[in-house]
Image: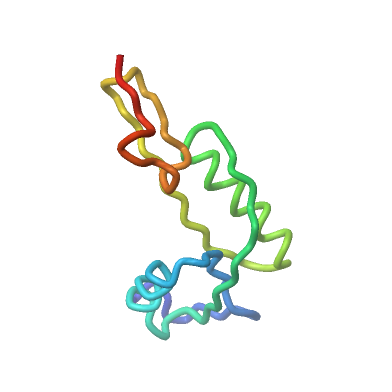
Length: 100
């Protein structure tokens, strides 16, 4: 990762997740280029635009750990349903969505 060369961090970046698979993916992508640790935080389930949600979650997490963070948030949008956003993707099941 050329962009990470010469980057000096005074402390590791905290990747906020409790998901072992996501942690594995980040380790594979970052390797040893950026020092990081993982931590499960109980962040609020926000609603709004996906970019705004991610920014706010990162801000809240950074305040809680008092340092740099990486957050990952998934949003599923249905354009055919006038932009309906299923913000809590992990809670969706085939019985959750009823189309009329």
